[in-house]
Amino acid sequence: MRSVQEGLWKKIGPALILVILSLLTGLEAISQDRLSQALESYDQGMQSDDRNARMQKFRQAERLFQAALEQQEASAALWTNLGNAALQSERIGPAILAYRRALILDPSYDRAKQNLAHSRSLMPEWIPTPNQGGLLDTFFFWHTTVARSTRASLAAIAFAGVSLALSASLLLRVSPLRYLAGLLGIVFITLVASVAMDPANEAYLEAVVVVPDTAARAADSINAPLRFGQSLPSGAELRIIEDRGGWLHIELHNGRDAWLTQSQVERLSPHPL
Image (cartoon, rainbow, N blue to C red; front, top):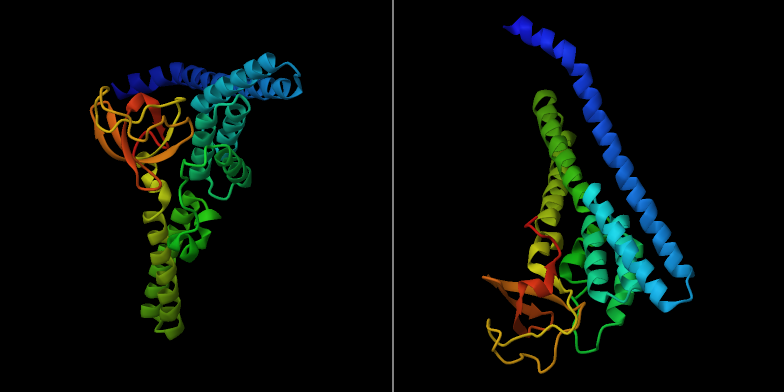
């Protein structure tokens, strides 16, 4: 039976591998084509003097960047490009959402940080923004310069170093190796704490309003009165306190709370990290 299976694999195996490789190559080509089309549409929008044509090109670029994101691994640069297209088409909510997603992937990505700050400056003054530069950011200053995945990898390397240094100190009875193990242990604990307390972990509970003139209610009912006396603009950033069957109990970054429907906002991460 085994010889039959081996013979069958020898016959169809190479052809199957070629088919899989062809499919992967084709998907990559489609993704690159979408990205090229998106960049071309964006450039055409920047060069156009007609407002309607410009808006059309920027919205087309936004859709194509979104399609490229769905077909290849997300990157800070790609999310920032999508945010730029959304911002140029005057969709501040999707732009802020895209920039914040870019900064989850790479907290040090300057283009996303600068464009996020500019987008926030376009919001009404009564809309609060998340606090920046808290105690955690002061102590763990490399939160904003080293990606979360890099910190996790460095923590694994530090742990391996602790294990090797301790083992060597026990075998060779060399005191400096114990000191090295202690130093690496401090580095390991610091990195693990940084990853564990990373704001990116809360991305599932952070959201951005993406619908213009969103009615914020005082309760989870369409008949409830408006909570703030005026609608929330697209681009308002908030925290999710409770998810209740289509309604979200939210809190702005000044402590004021309200109820919104799920369709009015998008979370920074669709799933807990």
